View 1 (tube, one colour):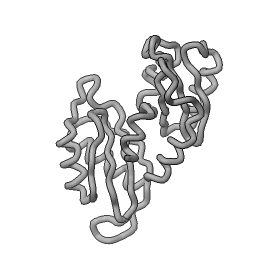
View 2 (cartoon, helix red, strand yellow):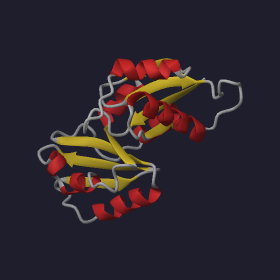
View 3 (tube, rainbow, N blue to C red):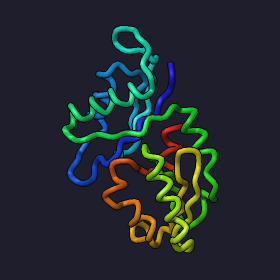
View 4 (cartoon, rainbow, N blue to C red):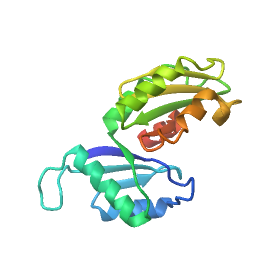
Length: 182
């Protein structure tokens, strides 16, 4: 069994409501084991043996597509997820380059399905005020430290919220990711 983490994009905001119990029930019905949700922001940890219902091997891309289709069918929205193995998420969390305990700062990881969008965001981060936002590129992610006082009003937060990035990016607080690994 492989341990996976699914990070759903855009749930419980903008009119898309997905209750944790319903999300867990969906993942259970798809044949996954040890399903648990963390917080109400679309985070699911589960185990999967790597095969489809007929016993053939299921690639990561096919698994991601199957979960997105299940979310779309069950909850009626254009679902997009980040799918990571537990080992991959451990590496991402372990590589956080800032002091995650720094008082007054939010430690975030920005995940993306479009490398060009992540590169564009990383390049634009060079122009933001590092008194409010500090961004570093990681392996397929951007690490982001955001001054709590500025929050979603910071330049980088506003940039990540632009419509063109919404279908391909999602971010999580490092504390949420640690809870997923607990």
